[in-house]
Image 1 (cartoon, rainbow over the protein chains, first blue to last red):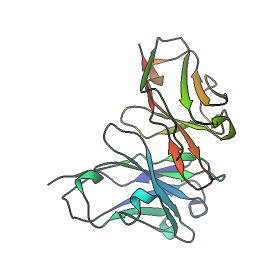
Image 2: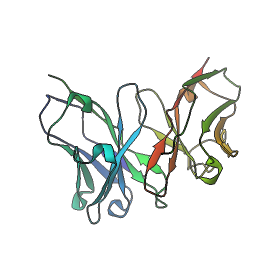
Image 3: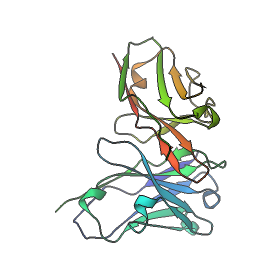
Image 4: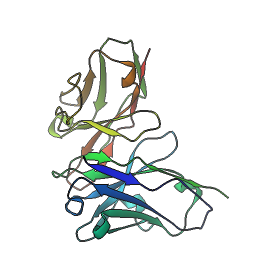
Length: 119
Length: 107
């Protein structure tokens, strides 16, 4: 059974750093892209970018370039999403998802990590 | 840029059929995928490549397309189908577009 398990909720202050994780199991984790998707409170889904575990290649969507870092450790089947200067507007739920082999859709999703940034 | 337009909400009585549209320019030429997001949960893929159902998705879920509209149809709607539904396409530039989502209420 394919599973993506994300780290727990976080509460941070503006300007702080944060790393959240997404651990995969039940499939060849390093061979499929991982997507990070943001969902602000009461809003829809936004793709932030992609991470390829095998060689750590990344693709950032323009609004997120320079704002977040995608990283991973394929030895533990884990991808990370990192911030170095959180803003209140970064509050939301962050999902990781595995990208289909055809690079067209997201076939399995993590349960989401709630990030709250507040002074 | 490319946009996908979804009605914010719709409602249907139990046992009836819900058809959720997703509008896009010439969407007939694109591969459309659909996700269900129940309240407080992660999205779940319910249709891929317009009309294919992943393992575990009931046959009550089906998809179709016309020139400018893709549709997700749910027959014999149940209370558990109450959720937000998102359509999605993946453009050649690696740009991924999600529709704004339709909140389906089961009366």
